[in-house]
Length: 69
Image 1: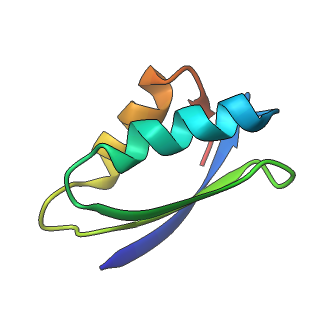
Image 2: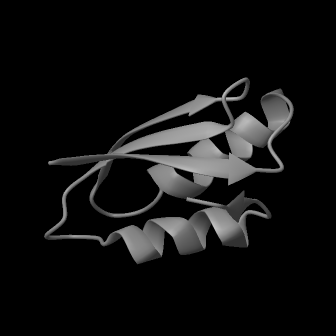
């Protein structure tokens, strides 16, 4: 498993948190998601043999949020 923490702009409330969690938890290979609204961070644990970081970033972007790092 691989752990990554991404800086994500545009998240400000519980709805934002739920939207990002839903977008990522539905992806194959994603084992865990933790959203920290105060830090504007999303921590993701995933199986790199099933999904890559670019697909994870795309899912966050598709949910309407901007991955900045």
